[in-house]
Amino acid sequence: MASSTTTLLLYTNQTLSSSFINSSLVAKPSQLFLQGRRNQSFKVSCNANNSGEHDKNLEGVDRRNVLLGLGGLYGAANLAPLATAAPIPAPDLKSCSRATITNAPYPSPAHAVDEEYIAKYNLATSRMRELDKDPKDPRGFKQQANVHCAYCNGAYKIDGKELQVHESWLFFPFHRWYLYFYERILGSLIDDPTFALPYWNWDNPKGMRLPPMFDVPGSSIYDARRNPHVRCGTIIDLGSYGNETKTTELQTMTNNLTHMYRQMITNAPCPLLFFGKPYRLGTAPKPGAGTIENIPHTPVHIWTGTVLGSKLENGDTSFGENMGNFYSAGLDPVFYCHHGNVDRMWNEWKQIGGKRRDLTDKDWLNSEFFFYDENRNPWRVRVRDCLDSKKMGYDYAPMPTPWRNYKPKIKTTTGKVNTGSLPSASKVFPLTKLDRAISFSINRPTSSRTQKEKNEQEEILTFNCVKYDDREYIRFDVFLNADKTVNANELDKVEFSGSYTSLPHVHANHNSSPEGISFELAITELLEDIGLEDEDTIAVTVVPKAGGETISIEGAEIKLVAC
Image (cartoon, rainbow, N blue to C red; front, side, top):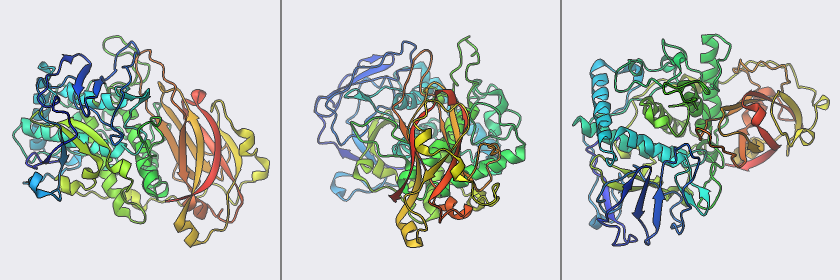
């Protein structure tokens, strides 16, 4: 991640009102009022309380700010002028200074770090926890955890609509900036500008266990609110949905590599499939997650957090705390190690080639977030300034990526499933609940496409308006050319198309009914591998794993989409 010797570029924000500069902020638990652009009044809270009440709507936010947030719920008494942080020189050198990077860090896989590093990491985290004694210090451990809570749990509303960094194209850039400032704070607390957060490389069999340094009771990076099964070297399930999959360790690792291949290659040939759907001001939150956010990002949270419905140490009913629920995830230090690898996947994906490149949409590039640095200074940062991690001052220590060559080759079905014996999609949907495996036939928009046509348009299987209970873990798998007898615990098969998962965004007795999301799977490669390119109609099977009783799906279709 970022070096604390990186000099950020400072720009004067001409759109700020003079009343903001050095304004006095009234610090209150869970909320903060601050004067921002054009004298708008912002009310910010983590909203992680048991009342289920939400803050009043925000109004009048500049529409260039697709998302403006606050890094720290209580804030400082006197803020410096809000500015734009950019890790590279700006064209106008009269208004800024050149960024410099000294001893840029080189994040390592968590399982391979030495004892000296572990000691430094524990010391830095311990000192961050000590900062919690001052609730106004935005660098404190709980305040840093609240940053994530605030951006994902209803703290920000505009015109009645919640602003949310998950399940959209904001997911990767928000978390990259979040780790950037978090790491700078840790490094400054131990006076080590070379300190870098490790990454939990769960995409490699050598890293498919909880990194041992996080499993030392009493250490500052230990969290008692983890599922007991994460201990003793248990193999992680990158498709975890809250229940143990009844299979061998070897099959679990095989399934993990299959998930990685499908999510990084098969289902992510286009930028929007990887990053997530566009999310613009005024639109509903969570329009649709990208491949890696969906799996393995969410299942790692689920696998690590407490068992949903179990009892916590204070007697409360668990909602997956800490890692297993978005509002509390940042309270487990392994969260940042997990997201280090998520961030690494962004770099790895672009290296695969093809059309795998950053988005160019100005609304995405100009989206903004708000954080505090190691000196308690507030920074307004943009997506466009975090696209190249090397320019931000860090690069990842290389590790083998065996999933790149883990394309499923084994077929479980000989020939083509008889689609004539299956109900059509129009007769199956709308589906009010997914409480059992379903199979249906579905028409393709065209068949026998040329390679040129495939290069221009990806064939997408889309499930429209998927709704579910946002308090539950959700998981269902999708297979092509299979029937209800498919073994959904063995995913290393050609017919496996992909999975959908969801992590609870709520807590306590608060109810949530999300607006329907669209779940998309790229199937061009699968049709080739299965031998269905010339077929006008194909068979689709959907197998629920968790939360099926609450899942409804309005419809399913196949369409051609230009990448």
